[in-house]
Amino acid sequence: MSSTITIRNLLPDTDLVCFLVCSLFTKEECDNLLNSERKASFQKAISNYPTYYRNNDRLVIDDSQLSAYLFDKIKSHLPDHIENWTLAELNTRLRFCKYNANQYFHRHLDGIHYVSTTKQSKLTFMIYLNNAEEFEGGRTVFYKTKDSTDIWASYVPQQGDVMIFDHNLWHEGEEVTNGEKFVLRSDILYTKELEENSKEPFSGHLGYIWKILMFDNETLLSAGRDKTIHVWNMNGESRQTLRGHQNSILCMEKMNERTFISGSRDKQMKIWKRNDNRMFELISSFSVHSATVLSICKVTKGFFASSAADNSIKIVNLNGQIQHELIEHTNWVWQVVKLHDDYLASCSEDQTIKVWNYKNDKCIRTFYDHCSVICLMYDQMTNTLVSGNFQGEIMVRELSSDFNEIQTKKLDGHNGIVRTILKLNETLLASGGEDNKVKIWNIQSGICVQEFQHDNFVQALELTNDGKLLSASYDGTIKVWKI
Ligand SMILES: O=C(O)CCC(=O)C(=O)O
Ligand SMILES: [Fe+2]
Image (tube, rainbow, N blue to C red; front, side):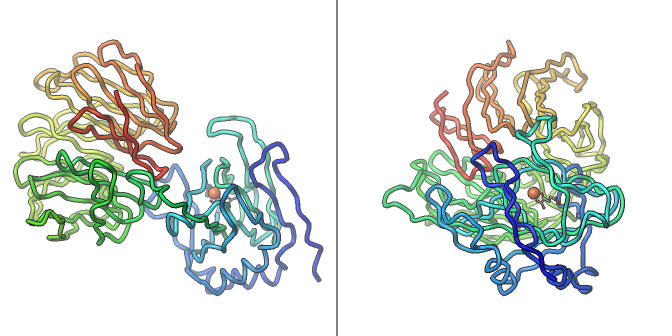
């Protein structure tokens, strides 16, 4: 028995696409999609993502045939154009999601899937594979903004319905409190023609940029979710693209005039060296961590510290040999920075900042915050440690020579997680956050003196030798600011 297909617009008071195609798939089709083999293959949310975000089980498959079949069913209901983008196809990556009791997918925006600079996803595609009678909770809920408390629209899953919505809509998969909920999600891809001469400087990354690094006065490196490192001149022209990592690259650090290191979600670190023709070559790869490498900092000539999602910090030489291990954090160590002499500091998802003497593997101080500490910056001149946290606060800790807290000041910070902090000069500090802003602060007065805007999270900052500020964002761009 088949019921009639109907369209239900969920958010009539916005121009953004958000509608249901009800009863597009029959019960048999849903049961076929969720066959017993697939049902047995779901994987737990692994430590690749913080659990505050999502903890449901998933099964990810790449299936162009199935994707083409699904697209064929939905395509007549989809907008042919979104701005100057034209409907293309369904992403071949299909994600089956399973929510058991106490599982959820907290409020978020769906990420854009980039195929190339002219082909990317615009809309989320989600089939509800079972009925809300089989579980409690588990609605899909939409919100006007990241923080609004009022629900904009909500939907109780019905088997065979398909939800289509714009990637710019905040939404959540509400916690399931009993039973099991199943959905299948993918993305609708759109293409656009590239106009002649429209290439922006530093453009080429597909998706999030995680890190930028001034290698020398004329060379900028950038790395991100597309697993590549781009080498740029200061006009923003691409000089080289470095490949080798198998997953997102989150951090890079310069070791000497010719060498830098990169760290990735593939758990590896790679050493790259510039040859006499000024081209970078991969020298070696090693993995000393059992999870994503989150940050790297040079400790001394030939030695660096790396922090990771395995909760540890390791001091490693350029042959990849571990010299010291600092293990006291109880959750991801987001960043490690060098202090003076034999001291390092680190900040963690476990809500602490720790100061270490790495030579004897000892933690000598712990500062407690009230939420995850995401980024850290040390200013040797004033012996000050500046940290940014999950709630958008920036703490400026003035320390004594033996790292006791003398005075701590709180800056207003960001309306969202603080992602990065950079010292600009004696008086100014820059920060970037999940409110998509770059903020410039006067350290003494604590006042924000300038603000710049991106289209998505600001993840990394750098200073050019002629005093301009570079900011890199999840929006895939690197922007240059005069300060
Ligand atoms: O399960 C839901 O209702 C929402 C899932 C979701 O937002 C996603 O998978 O990105
Ligand atoms: Fe989502």
